[in-house]
Amino acid sequence: MSWISNVLGSSIGKKLLMALSGLFICFFLVIHLTGNLQLLAGDGGQAFNEYAKLMTSNPLIKFVSIGTYLVFLLHIIDGLMLVFANKKARPVKYAVGAKAGSSISSRNMGILGSIILVFLVIHLYNFWFVYKFGSMPTVDYGHGPVKDLYKVVAMAFANPAYVILYVLSMVAIAFHLIHGFASAFQTLGLNHAKYNGLIKIAGIAYSILIPLGFAIIPIYFYLVLA
Amino acid sequence: MKVKVKVWRQKNAKDKGGFKEYEVLTDPDSSFLEMMDVLNQDLLNKKEDPVAFDHDCREGICGACSMYINGQPHGPSKGTTTCQLHMRSFKNGDSITIEPWRASAFPVIKDLVVDRTAFDRIIQAGGYISVNTGNAVDANSIPIEKDKADEAFAAAACIGCGACVAACKNASAMLFVSAKVSHLALLPQGAPEADLRAAKMLNQMDEEGFGSCTNTQACEAMCPKEISIKHIARLNRQFFKSGFSGNQ
Ligand code: HEM
Ligand code: FES
Image 1 (cartoon, rainbow over the protein chains, first blue to last red):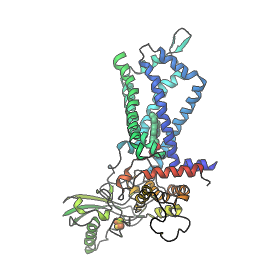
Image 2 (image 1 turned 45 degrees about the horizontal axis):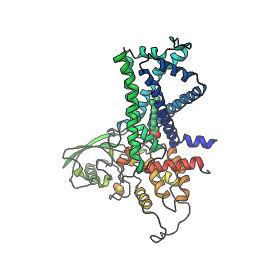
Image 3 (image 1 turned 180 degrees about the vertical axis):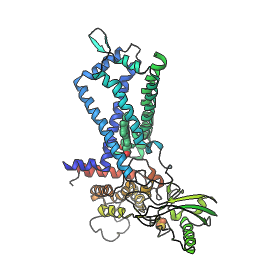
Image 4 (image 1 turned 60 degrees about the horizontal axis):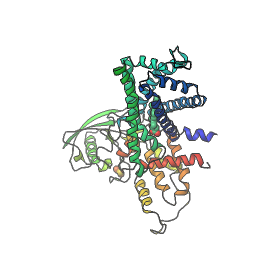
């Protein structure tokens, strides 16, 4: 099987893994956002809490979520490996740094990714870890107690520091994807004059709409509900 | 016109090196290299060591000239090599910083001269057609679609100067490798080995210590021959084909 590690370990192979894992995470974010938008249902959190229960108890979904953790890990480890290898390829920096010819996002994918990573750790600790391993308030909708994640979320989003952190992290994701979304297609070899424009527009639309959708929730909780 | 040039001076590969500033009196219609010639004559007159820099054809076809001028390989003019850059692209009194290409795969030999034999080794790894294809055949005796011929030709315009490596934040040679891969893959003589060639050349590129491609597109913007990154997409496709379905 050494051929697999040869192909995936090469510079293009590492980028193939980045592109596939990155696009998978883009897909995951759509699902995640659909779930989160139930926080705005105005039902005191019932829809969201029952959804959270389904997501953590259904065996098929559990299986898929383990896959998602692994894809995230792959993207992070592979991304950091690329960042370090690329730094090594230019040990002596230029006195006059290059700015022309490339976007700021594309030049700072590692930094943007690292900001997202810091957010990810805090985010998982606050919600995922507490839900799974912490002591949670419960609520009963008529068929036994359900963990009240809505309440935990509402408490977190009442904290202005957390809201700011959350919104800034969404900005980092937006910039990561302004370059990343279209870049992944180029990495996969999908560069064709007929479709490049479409990919670019879809990428910009995705990079603005999805992070905006996420960011609206803490802002709404903080300004309207709190 | 008078310009202030800040040039990287480094005696040899082991020397630490540093910048030195000179004033040069030059003509707006002279080329950048002619300005350097004037500077070197001044230095010789003063019995100082002239600035070492690579040059050969001085007409934009050999790829020898390599200077990183004010943050851009080959300077500010688009689609232009250093030898074809004119001093009229600058203003009287301008300061111009001149650095060598910076990449671990392109070590500095002296001043602005870097060792670009890594490119030769990449070509040796697969940038050829294995069988003798004979003399150049008569035009049109092998019909080739016009758009393919055009694209192969656009890729073949690569002069191997290394500006792509110099421009890339990762010092990646992907644009160079992809131009060589495309230019052979699109033509009937080169097509049979296209996938394997891509893999061999890419592996050599990795071995030489060039970085990987973040798709920033700085290479395309800085390439004196304006080679497109669509060739990089083709290199990727061919590499995947060879990696996942090839026999070797
Ligand atoms: C919201 C989560 C994330 C999404 C949707 C995402 C998506 C993407 C996409 C689509 C790409 C483009 C791949 C390509 O050029 O082929 C990319 C590149 C990259 N990502 Fe992420 N990413 C995320 C989080 C992270 C994190 C946490 C890191 C941590 C270090 C990271 C590091 C990188 C790096 C370094 C690159 C550039 C690799 C290169 O081209 O050299 N990303 N990402
Ligand atoms: S000296 Fe030949 S391309 Fe500049």
